Length: 419
Ligand code: ASP
Ligand code: MG
Image (tube, rainbow, N blue to C red; front, side, top):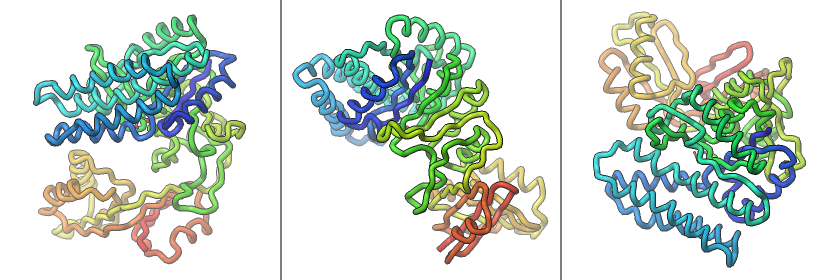
C-alpha cells in the first residue's frame, strides 16, 4: 500500500482536480491511501473568517466567498449532475454557521479548529465524489476516525497508540471495499469527538502518520515544484534539483526552514524506514526527489533564506559576562513570549540572535528584559543558512551586504546579512 498527499495547490480548481484523477488512475493498481488538503487558499479564508468572528466583524461575505469558490469547482466538474454535491457542500458549510452561532466566550483556539477543518472536509468530499462520478471507486474516510489527538487545539499532539489502532482497523476495512481511500490532511479528533488541527501545512504530517501506522511502502507528496531544490527560486537563479537525500539532511533542512518538507513529516517515516518521494503533479514522469534512510548521499550546497529578520543584541547593563544564568533567563523569556531565536551567538558581554519581525513580541521582549539588558535591534536583515557551504557559496551570500552575524559548524553556515 502507498500513501499519496495532494496539497492545496494541486486541488485549487477544476482542471487541477481532473489532473489528480489522472495521477490516481496511473497508480491505483495497488491500494492507495490519499490525503488531501483544503483547496487552494481555503485555509487562509477560513482563518480570516475566524478572525472576523472574534473581532466582531462581518463574516457573511467571507462565508459566501467560500461557498461560491467551492460551488464553481463543483459545477465545472459535475456539469448538470452537480446538485447532490452542491447540497453536500452546503450542508457541510452549515456546520460553520452553527459554530459561528455558538455562544460567545468559547475558546478561540477550539473554535478555530472546528471551523478551519471544514476546508479539508469540503475538498475531500468533492474529490471523492468526482472520482466516483468518473467511475473510480473509492471510500471517503473521516480523518477524525483515524488520528486521535490531545486537546491542544491548533497544535494538537498525536496519541500514537490510539491512532495506530484506529488507523489500521478503519483503513483495512475501507480498502476491502475499494482500493482507493480518500481522507483529510491536517485534522484529527479528541476522545470527546472534537476536531483538532495539527498546525498549518500539517497535511504532510498526516500522510507520514498514516504511512507509519499502516507500514506503507512509501509516501508521495505531489507538489507544484519538481522536487526538493537546493534553494528557493524566489531568491536564487541557478537552483538544482536534489534527486536523492537522506532523512538526516531532510531534517536539518526542514529545521532551518526549507518550505518543501514539513519538519514533523520526517520522524515518523525515518523511524519506520519508509521512503518519501516529492514529485511534480505537473510533470508526472519526472522522478522528483527521494528521501530515505540511505547514508552517504551527497547533496549540493543548499540555501535557506529567512527574510524580514531582526537581529537583537543584548548586553547586561552591569557589563557582567554572559553566563549560563543569563542564557537560562533569556531563553525562558523567549519561550514565554513564543519568540524563536532562529540563530544565536554570544561573546563575553553580548548575546545576539535573529528572529522574525513581530512587533507585539518585540515589545514584550523589551518589557521583560530592558531592566537588566541594553537592547539593540537591527531590522530588515536576512538570515541565510547554507548547508554544505564552501567559500564560493559564502561569497555569493555576502556579496555587497554587511554581515551582522556569522555562525558556522562543520556542515552549516548561518549568516545574518543586510543590504
Ligand atoms: N490546509 C492546511 C493549510 O493550508 C493544511 C495543509 O495544507 O497542509 O495549512
Ligand atoms: Mg497546503
